[in-house]
Figure 1 (cartoon, rainbow, N blue to C red):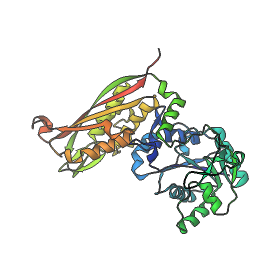
Figure 2: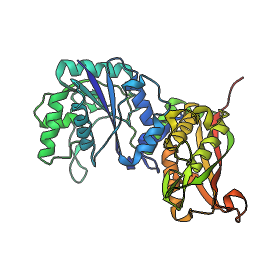
Figure 3: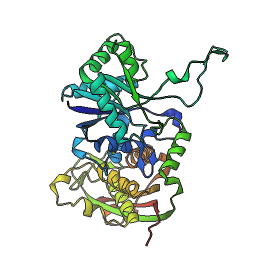
Figure 4: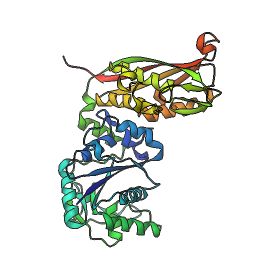
Length: 397
């Protein structure tokens, strides 16, 4: 029985606070979604993993998977989620329907501590029951209250379960249940177990894990950091400098900081010629002492012809996370006579922040001319210089 896993990563996570959706906040140097994806990719019973992401998070997601471990060939191209979790899962199921799957696991990206044992139990329960969800007995006594917060009843704790993910279902019945709910315009189901119950499916509960924490509030992020030991790591500051230049040629636009900007001339380059992203990439690689952009993406390699430069910056940012570090600040200066950078400054900052997985407040973009001196002043080329500030764990000798 083929098994597919849907990783739901399209939410905004507003309750967790911060500028970055919780599934992209760093835990032990990696985004939370990366931990969830790696757990599924390393799981023997899972044949394919389908991420469902927000349309605004494509650059963030690219950074999150740049250095991912596990059976990478199992990872499918992400699909775009909907306005609700329910709609996002439905879109994932429809995408899988075109590929084929007999059993599907649905897992929240914000549960990065899922274990191989829990995944295996989910698959076994799904095969045996057709619809099964993990649950744990609440540690606290539960009270049912009225509108005035007065206690109405105290249910027997032994019969209660706090439900988690991954939840396992026979693929066809779950897809049909989602289609029925969508046709009935019912969009308020908080999880797939509840939707399956509404559709008349018998849902079993198998043993969950108390450690399978869901990241909901900012305090959860701090707890998760402590659990992973990242908070106690000793980090040292490193800085790197990057520079890039390209000649101008015929064209009607240039790419700067991941943003396409109308211009009287274009860029002559092997990739998209984004001098800002190239300089930033080199600055991060310099801070890591891991060579330069040409080492990792040789200009003579046809794979990188016309490549989008966000891939290069996402790779460099992921290298920082892979080594257990954090990016504190990115600062770039564009040197050109035209186009004007000012009108595009904020969207460039936001785009770079998304690609690198850092707050917009940690990105600075400036521009200057060369007072019409040199090749830049003559309008023959465009350049950028950049500085990256990162922190890395102390290396023990």
